[in-house]
Length: 476
Image 1 (cartoon, rainbow, N blue to C red):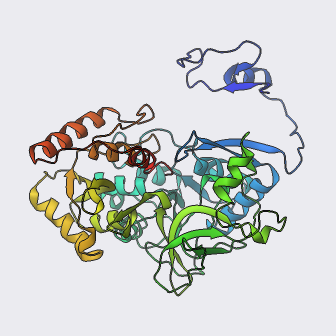
Image 2 (image 1 turned 135 degrees about the horizontal axis):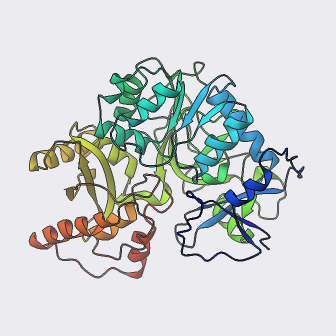
Image 3 (image 1 turned 180 degrees about the vertical axis):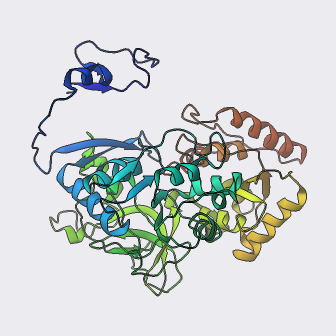
């Protein structure tokens, strides 16, 4: 039962939502605060295992999952990882450049930094509005010395203003990346230009379900490694299993499914009102004994593919369901996209599968260019050559599509299922959550008309193929 709902209005007196307010249950925050101004409100003590919040994350084949996080375990975990992996102290000015409605915003804009008593910068709106210098002006003006953002944002800022950071007098001691694998080429720009060669970079790997970082490096203690998130954080013991339930050894060069062998304080408690789905998705796959009450028999399946180097560092390849199987070869989307990003003209890249009568699946690449550049066959050929050189002939894309922009969510994530639908002449699904839904029709017209002109006549997809396309990229 929901007792009270607090609704935030950006502008007092204006309510633009289509959801009607329910009298007696729904209250505007700005109206309530007027009655409490100047008063000390004592905190309410809660049990450590009491639910703290629900954070919804996408599901690959069903409705979004409501991840239920606990009060004590979650708070202790984000405070600990903020302190030891982001080097946050009370005297710092810390900026997590992310959407507050995302788990990164909850953990590392609000709970973690404030638990440590630091100054936390909150920013709302497009990263580069009104121009690409906006983030660096804010960093200079507020004296930000710790900067935390996602590779998607880093790529966007590099694309829009590759030399902009050099114009501003700020100094970061520490920078972090979060949310997705970062390409080595983008990492180096982040280090050399944004960090001015001075800042430690901590790459991180974790998920909505985890509460906080699972894989990372201790700043200044463990070596930085472009494109790798590092080993498991303190208290986390990752392992990679293959599809036959065998352990994939470090240094073997083989990819597999990354799992966590032990429970930890920040792990979510359940999927809201779906306990069976919780077990099925995260624990059933590699369970050794379903009657066991011993946590050692229930490793956590993260749903990401990974490779572990001989030095113990993990390289995350992307979601298990985002692997493109070309003639029996499993190609990670991040591998394909990283190769494309080595082409200097490319600002962003996304790999999707397209049905192929000979190979089962083929790769199609979508790329957008850096400002001031025009599409050309030469750039398309450069992307193809880069992929063949970095990965091999088997990964050669069937088509390279140069587009003006990618369909993205409000937090800047590329919606790969939308462009996968376009490539396969399939339904692109719900686009209401996109920040730029108008781009979908532009891309569809460009790609599908060109395919038809080339004689690439689409065939009807099977139900299984349709579900595959719908699920592609969902977990991101």
